[in-house]
Image (tube, rainbow, N blue to C red; front, side, top):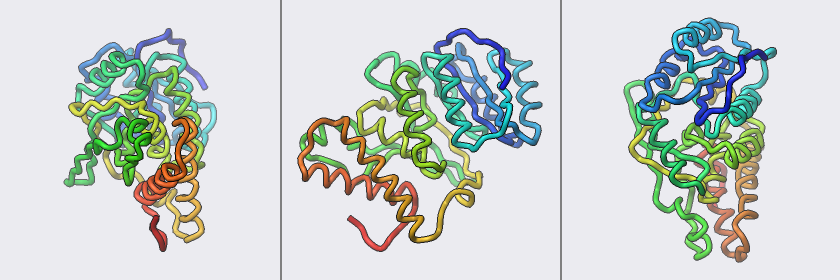
Length: 286
């Protein structure tokens, strides 16, 4: 892997990319046009076989805030995200991941960064989400019952599900504290399917999220991740939901002592959430 040296920065925007020639320039330009100007961007090319590297090099030539890192070998998508997170946390006090086909409003970086700097107890700053599927746009905002979670669980007021957008994975993360959660949770499921929701769940349950409604993240549907990673056999669907549920249920260890009833309600919440996040319906519900 080759790269130029870069001093420590306030904010790193990191692009883990593989064969992104069709959409990446628009995504790069979206970051270049942000109201917050004092960032550095790193494009981590996972040994693409298309014009990704060529497009990235030309963009970096036009805007010196951007840098291309070319991998020596191709790795799985999950692993490319892991190495991108490691690069980003080593270079910046805060970092933000960005896929090669996603966009955001121009105030996205500035307002989320400001929110994290204002509240040092938070590790992830997020905004509202727009999901674009052709001409159809879905607006996603969180339910209030996912905030102040530790207080709610102490009083037994556990919500039926953690209703948050998986796109919060692409918010701004505090490198010290937040990156450790990202690096531990992201590869834990062993597949990119639902890994974003699985990762963000710990930030939510541990009250580490600050939500800023004005900036919006634009998720553009069109990837083939469903056909690549979603499973169809009953056994595989059950195991995927079980692994998601148990992995999230382990977060209880950071919440202090819980009653048996609270543990049951917490497990039930994660089981239901696993159904929504994975899309795998079985024969029974809790």
